[in-house]
Length: 353
Image 1: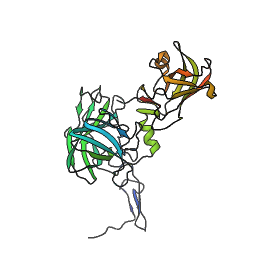
Image 2: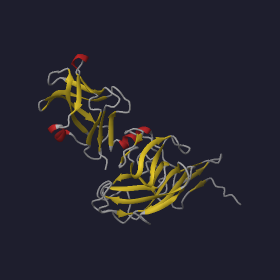
Image 3: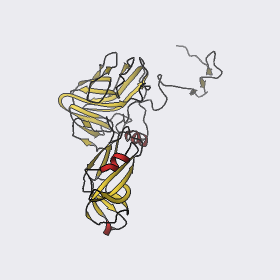
Image 4: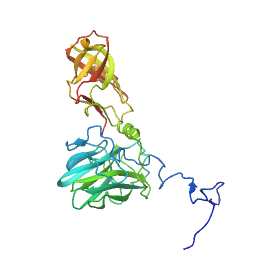
């Protein structure tokens, strides 16, 4: 075998070198893309390495989101965070099966009517690491455009076939990959690209990546803060997970009908996908403090949020009324801060599909 020895590589029509060789055997290359995709943030999945779990690290509620941005359904009875991982990863999703077909997936938001982030008829590569809890089992992936997560209305399938067998899992982690081809166009009503994994076994999965081109590249790890911010576009949680005395927001004392309440402004850390829905856990685990323990109100989030929620809440900010149940009764107009008082006190905003 012969060796080609050069100092630099340059195209005939270029004015500078594309690759510069050093005497120690290393090189410097000018790259504009990887496999036809961008150099950074090339993974269309959010939280593909399963490090963000705002809802908690154990999720037994089927047909729901567990690990941030990942929903599970059908024979998947629960999803838990696991430290059973391949090299280079901190966590995986353990997907527990009841023996029938399990489904987990992520809806990827389509941007604008032109769906510009997915080029028509271009190729994209799906890859991930997975292993079974015991034995062997086949795993497949399905890729399609849809209007919503659970509705097949106006579904547009990707090719070469909408479902492809990715391979056979064993009790050792393997990296699987397949290339899919985008259709010529999405339906005008499609809101998401849904990618779903299906199998019949309890298994572990992480390092999930979907990128432009027909080449599987190394998994792109982003910082924890970057992944968290991207997840909070769809779901934002304050409190819970054994976090006591966490500030929910600031505002003033006022009225919601005949009920004295703390009217609180909550600024979202990032713009949410859509105007979110509000949910609460531990509704008696909040305090409204106006500057002293004697004046603190015990509060609960009111079921009827009134006109302020309708008029002032948006994708960037929310007004939430915490109604007084006991304790102090400060005058209307008094400044107030609301905080959690128990490990289960939680306010959550969801703009998921």
